[in-house]
Image (cartoon, rainbow over all chains, first blue to last red; front, side):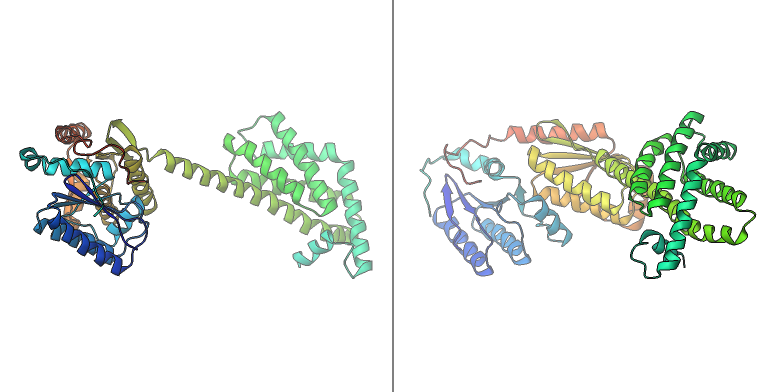
Length: 132
Length: 311
């Protein structure tokens, strides 16, 4: 299933709506990293609220997206990890070190705003959000 | 052998050994009639012996006599009908009444055995001239009486266990409150012994509360925890990490000197955990973190109204 990637101001938002196959995840990663550069984004939000399970490949993909996006100049934040998923991940030792995680989309936007504050101040292009 | 005898008591009609069954049924009827006739005298004797043996000291003499009467009637009825449901229900109700008053298991077993003795003694007296008949009467009396004693004692123990389970559940619920002290700040005071089951429950409740209250900072206070082993410590670390995945920072406060020494000695890695000496310091630190956050631009900045992605 294709994951929609929305553009919201300076940020890209990928909202995962259902369980994804490994191929879907790889595709999401490639699409996100390509778009970060193309649309000159400062931040990426991956919303996993809808996921009830997360396997090692998904966790690794999230980490890879974070690191790759950073190389392309954007901060990434993972939002909406479910409590049960969080604890299962920790028990398996997948703690997503070095990856920012916050409660929900609103927190994610606030987090990115905080992170990119200095850079946002210098120029603030107001573009309408568009599907990418 | 007891099984077979009590079987013949409870299923008289379907027993193929007609003659034997008939006579034992007759004996049982005679026995029940005897117990009905001497009801007043026997239950008084029983109540007297209960008092003398200093059982049921938590109850007054009138109460003992009232309960004794009820038990006696149920006892005779169970002997007569061979069915134990009524007695079971009664002993459950009785247990419900007397357990809160501090009646112990040995007392309940004691009084039922006393009743058995009192009744057996009265049978000895009645049939002392006819030993052969006494034997046959006792043959039909004993298995039923034993089963009655069993039923009452088991009923009592089961009720006790039910209450204990209920209380354990209640204590567990009580002992894991997740409190919101202000917007986005939760406190989880842990008191008492943490076993693996409770640790898991704590974590579950905390993670849910973080989500429900949209908490940003959590202070876990372990002042009331006397000891911690490596399993519990690792669980605590996992809880801290899981909370981080939900976007909440955890501050652990009140680690006692003993626990601090134990944890370092057994080599639990707590380097990822923010710890503050006491609860007051923990809350101050939490407020500092929240103030830092509030200084950031609000979530509405750079966002257009009407866009909803979360469901």
